[in-house]
Image (tube, rainbow, N blue to C red; front, side):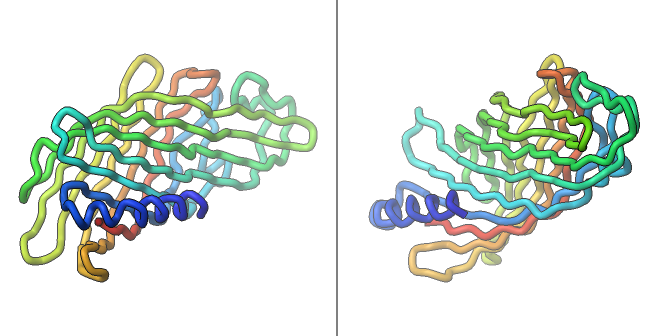
Length: 249
């Protein structure tokens, strides 16, 4: 992936600084999330599973985090997550995604894309055996939802940027290389509610000099509730296990 290659270039460029000074921490990584959609979308509550036949799909994600010792400035973490599903379904007359209902039954190609990029700015409140980070995430969605048939089609762009409250709490198990963490992003305002949380177990080991290598196994769940936001309605959950690999300089 192009983005992952760019993150690796950043890591290689900054690694000498982190090794020499040991005051800046750089973490890069990526993985795969096997996410299953549940719930509905659209003005007529179109079921993602039984109607649109969308099933679990492997989606990739990459991240980079930079921590520093300057108290007044927040640390930063960037993550890009792909969330794409495609399929084929028979929709009935009256099916309404965003205001232009189908006038007859039709076979359609289905596409749902909730891919997004997070920029998280956070402070380390605790950094011992117990870790606690608090901050704010700016999440930018860049996707779409569409039902494309021969005689009729409906589609809507999902382009939006919104702030989320961010928190992470974790515990290290001394002398084992293991740590456990809970991560959450959350917002609940007016017609938009999003709860995105993950629980993960990380095992770190020495693979390269001055570099901690980590394997991550986790479970992520994202609830998206929209009440006619930019002509889109949704009450859906996307969840499943993920596996990731990271390098900490």
